[in-house]
Length: 234
Image (cartoon, rainbow, N blue to C red; front, side, top):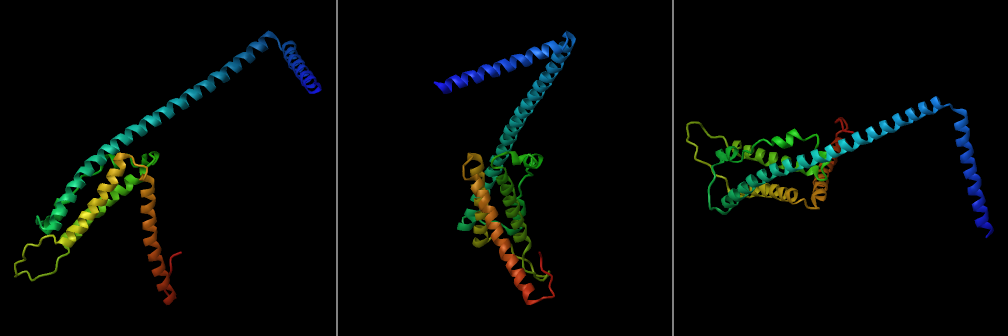
């Protein structure tokens, strides 16, 4: 009972202070001053409202841009995935001996179109929850295409007077290239289905690369230890 009485008395005292301050402001300020104060407060409120409206508009535009970018990127991945699947089937047939692929035709056979959307939106891909996986996707395509060029140009030297027989992609090479296109198909599937494993797949790729780089680092460090004159990377 005493506590509630004390609380009520405190509230009454606080209300009296608020009324006293309000009455003091009214008595101290003329009508023109009150009008000026109201104008200033109105301007502040209007400016704050405008800032909030601009912020909400920009946030909505960013979300809309992110949706459009994602839709375009996924459509491009779908087209590249379709081409990757065709490449996968071609090399699986070559691996099984059902077809023969001239080695000299590898660069033309495995040529891929330029990723126009990916290049145009590369600076905004980070806004997507799995944007890093697009980088992995196109890097893997570039890797397997470059492998085709290497296979096509790496042939034993022969005397020019002797005719060179047509060389075909052997089963081992076909298996390697099929595996490369298979990885690309898996990444495309993950992107198109928006699977929850997208981020973990990206992290796994980074971890695998770091393991390789750590191995190189250890080899370089060991070589530097055996040869003190060799400069070691920091």
